[in-house]
Amino acid sequence: MILSGTRTSWIAGFVVLVIAMFFYLDRFSFIKRVLIAAALIVCTAIVASSVPLVQKRIDDMIEITAPYVKGEEQTQFNSLRYRVEAWRAGWNMGMENIIFGVGPGNTKSAMKNYVRENPQVKGLENLSHIHNQFMQTFAMTGLVGLFPLLIMIGCHLWLFMKYLGKRYSLIVRCFALSGLLLLVAYLVKSIPGVPFYGKNYLMMYGFSSATIWGCLLGALRLSEQDNCRVSQD
Figure 1 (cartoon, rainbow, N blue to C red):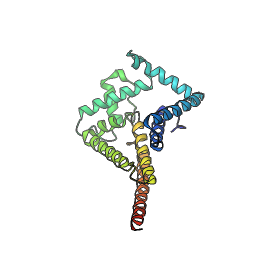
Figure 2: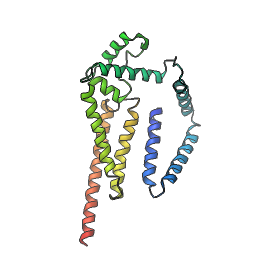
Figure 3: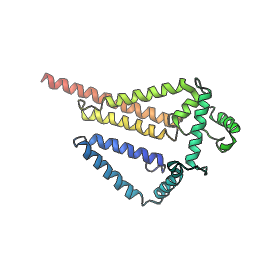
Figure 4: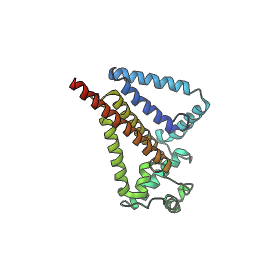
């Protein structure tokens, strides 16, 4: 995530780091965990700020978000406005075909039609995706595709969090945490991208998630066998 050089990956990295710290430092009080996490993030930010690429990325992010924070009109067609307009286009396309969408794989043709009707956003006509997983799914497959995606994410989130409880062994909880962090990273990346839509990203999520589940269930079975031996003794 850090070496990818993208701001979204860095944000996902911080989110994953904080969640992992709260898990492994659960012997401390909530306030102490917050302070430790804040201190680590500040130290990491100070060290990273000396890297020229990080400095440039931060400066660019401040420049493109400032008009939205201040409530000013965004006049430059930068990467943030590019995404905002793409999200708006995806929402409009989805609302026009709310049940089934415009069809999977039709992003480019649908976007060209949208730009033809809205020439003020010229520059979006060559988009291969809408830069947001949920808008992409809604626009391409409508509610028929969006609901199953949300259900899948909700089920995975519930299943991984279920095994985080302290009544399970530490190794079971660690595998559950790994699955949770994988899902959280994908969700953060889903804000400006489409990780559940691209074939490579989706294949990696399926492979990683299945591997984690196999390890988790194996550790759970071993833990149950150990408990049975202890009770018999």
